[in-house]
Length: 110
Length: 121
Image (cartoon, each protein chain N blue to C red):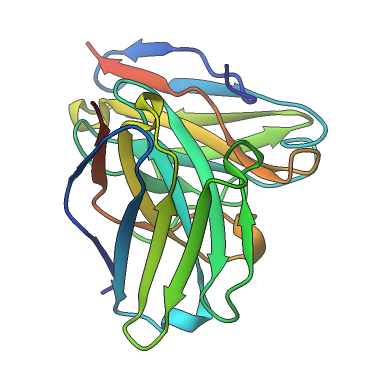
């Protein structure tokens, strides 16, 4: 199983706000930045949030990230059908000296 | 624009080796690292390691130490990932990704399109 823990699924209706959690430990989220990636069906992952809460240019401000202690969250407001994708959190782990990923959350827009 | 273009799909037998390439364009190759991430069918993402395109320093995932080698060719702005002693559970899509930070600690901002490696007898 994954070092970072995410719920396997999440859902919402268009226009709603959805949050996806990512739980880790002091050696990863607790002491390093968190990153979020969006993977649309059949495509490569795309960087969505970097350094806990920063958006790369081109990423809508409907997407936001936050971190508190050993947990992080991705929030998506004004949900749209094109947001239907898999979302992964990631962080550097000081104990493993590895990048660790969450198991991914499949977001369904109802 | 930044692009990472990977080599085509491969089919290998158990015990064989595979070498995947990743050609970068649209930025100064030696100013960034390259990480490799794989995804088994229907599964999540797994980090494999990182190489500095500046000096060739590497940092491999513990799980793959001894089986993986990452290299770069700065003359062609191409990164390579070789995986040896292939097993069926190495069947996956392999992605290269640009890594802005040191040792892959600062995320991956651009990704290749992926290369499917199938290991089957």
